Image (cartoon, rainbow, N blue to C red; front, side, top):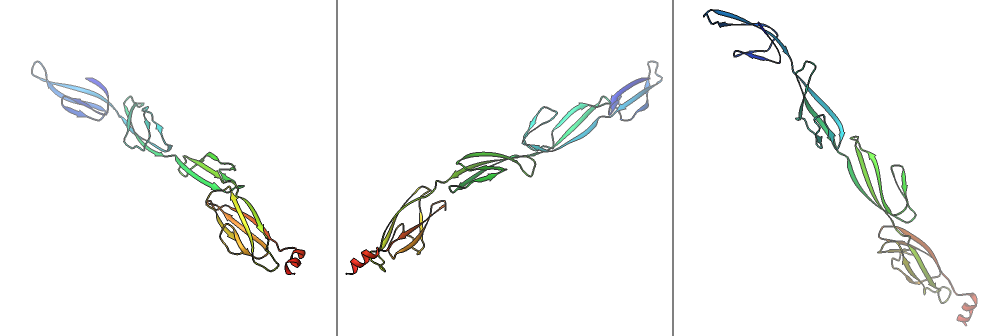
Amino acid sequence: VFSVDTCDSYTWNGVLYTTNGSHDQIFTNASGCDSIVTLQLIIRNSSTYTDNISGACDTYTWIDGNVYTASNNSATHTLINAAGCDSIITLNLTINNSSNIINNQTLCSGSSYSMNGNTYSTTGTYIDTLISSNGCDSIITTNLYISNAINIISNSSPVSCNGYTDGSINVTASGGSLPYTYLWSNGVTTQSISNVAAGTYTLNIYDANNCIAIDSIIVTEPSALQTSISSS
């Protein structure tokens, strides 16, 4: 009789054993007679286990010491279980990726931009970190440009006589972003206007970012004395 304590299986004299218990084999002894040998076999089982990991962001360091940067369902690692046999662990890893978003914003003078509870009102680059739907970071880089205000300088020439339409307004604009678009309250779309009657004219100037500046300019009539002199 002899005893064996092993894992999973044991091969004796060409016979594979996978169960506990006593196993006999007959041999021929030196005198040519049968000799019965008994094997007392203890089989301990190895084990397998799947390590399910989901929700890891970008990278994951597993028990094998490797850093994984992509999903993986084939890596294995072997430990020793309580029975003293192999414990083979298979990795089932899902990697979610963080996101990087470039957010370009152009605003008009006096405006502000809000992101993640923060309010930005000056030209610059701002970085905010949110949590995306997959539970990982969503890094938003906002490139914010606040346009300069559009400045209007104007001067008007009055009509020469009451009721005439020979008044004019000359305009110079600066600031904002070129080119400008002009729209007068009388429907004219040139920078300056001429041959207009006395009155108040409103000018809207739009820059390339569709920012707006508004000015109201008066074209006057001559005084009563001047009118009298002109009429005599």
